[in-house]
Image 1 (cartoon, rainbow, N blue to C red):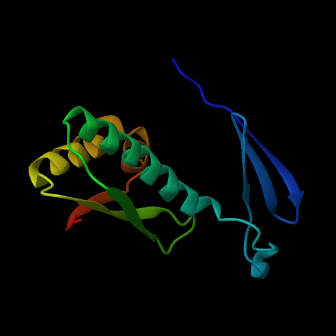
Image 2: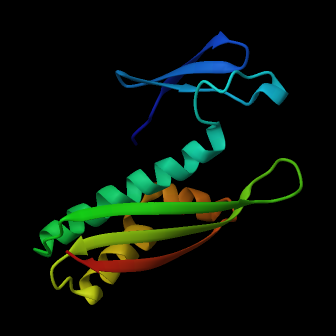
Image 3: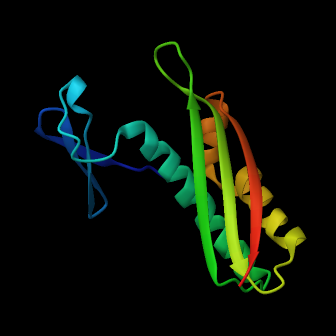
Length: 141
């Protein structure tokens, strides 16, 4: 069984330097809760993890399918519940790929495989109660 470990060290106020492997990132909060706005909030980092996880999957799958593309981005929108603790109850991903004559069916298959089979972040969020939806935009380039 694989394990992941991180270390979060308070730097000031409510800011934390988080070490993941040998990488560092800084999280903080807004001034109204004691932060200095020095880094992203923890909840949006969950959305970042989802985009990164699914993005890696989609690129890997499309490469195996021999689908060439010139650009790829993912926009993620997460809706939080009103009650505390605020949880993501709806998450929508928009996959935007540019290229010539991109095969929609292959891109759709890659995204579906990522979100339903391979991306552990998506499954973790789903098990926590989030409804995850997506759309795909293909651009000719």
